[in-house]
Amino acid sequence: MRTKDEALAAYMSFEAWSLTQGHCSVIKVLRFDRGGEYLSDAFNTHLAAAGTARKLTVHDTPRLNGVAERLNRTLLERIRAFAHGSGLPKSIWGEALRHAVWLKNHTGTRALDGKTPFRALDGRPPDLSGLRVWGCRVWVHDPDRSKLDVRAREARWLGFDVDAKIHRVLWSGPGTVSVERNVYFGTSAQFEGEETVIPLRTEQPVDPEHPQLHHPGRLRRPRPLLH
Image (cartoon, rainbow, N blue to C red; front, side):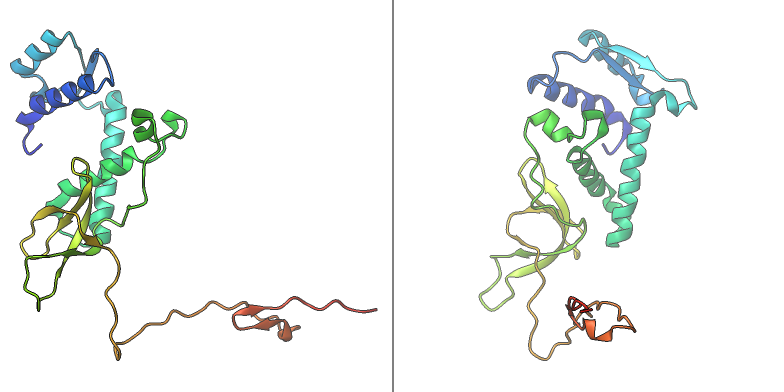
């Protein structure tokens, strides 16, 4: 939601989705704080017509709504981690929140005996084979360029689009977000003469009493001693 006055429309959309998909037959109780967006006449009328009971928490007591408050804290911590690790602007916090919720639904929890919310709802384990680091650089195929131009444009990966089941990417130039299908996550090829960084191989520590037992990149077994 962009503004709080959209709370009723968002709730009605979730209510219709949960009932239509057969996840519940009716929403019996709705618990929330005393925010004005939940206490409007339109919201009260809708709850009364649906037969949903309303439970309110006392002001300055977030522990009475602990499940929602703890979830909000977890999601906010992930958003900060995404922004810090990727270096992307804070203005796309909504995209970070979208991916944080996706990870939450695809992560096991003790409340479901180790199952993920996705499996508890859909009955099958989630497919995490395409999961990448949020904000990583990707290359998107661009078929509209000429034959002599580069056919790939660099972007940043923002997660999966649940509706289309494809990738959401951020274009660094205009700063817009789009959904793309032809996305490449590998690194670009290196030309001859470019600087190459070769990682150092970790060697086994040398035993000063038996230096012959150690060799760079190879570990020999000690010979048996004959008495």
